[in-house]
Image (cartoon, rainbow, N blue to C red; front, side, top):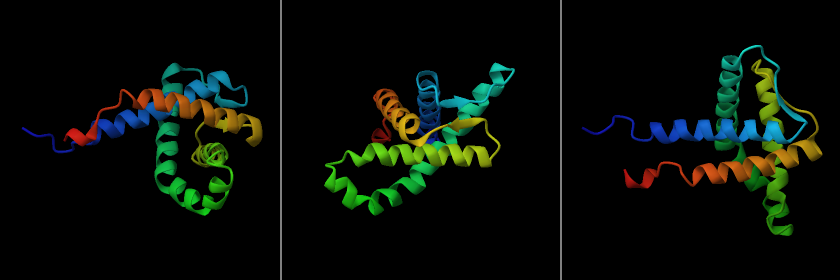
Length: 136
């Protein structure tokens, strides 16, 4: 019997991967932090929710920003991608704050840039083990 939602496992994995990548960045970069909560459960739920927000923003907003920044991407031979990823991280911080989630990026330049680099590396490593939707 085929699963009614064949891509659901992949979607959940990507949300978890985003959350893990954001959590690792918060451990390494002092200017990226999840709120100081009393319980581990609250922290895990916050990480998952911020991972969902980050994934949704990357799915909707990043392609638009990519097209708008195409001249800068070409001029810098793709290095502007780091700035674009940092912008996405800063927008995620703003959106999380607006939604009442305890996640913050203190400074754009170094915190968001380093955080985006770490998130890219961790996400790439986690996506190597991601379920492959092309087999469905």
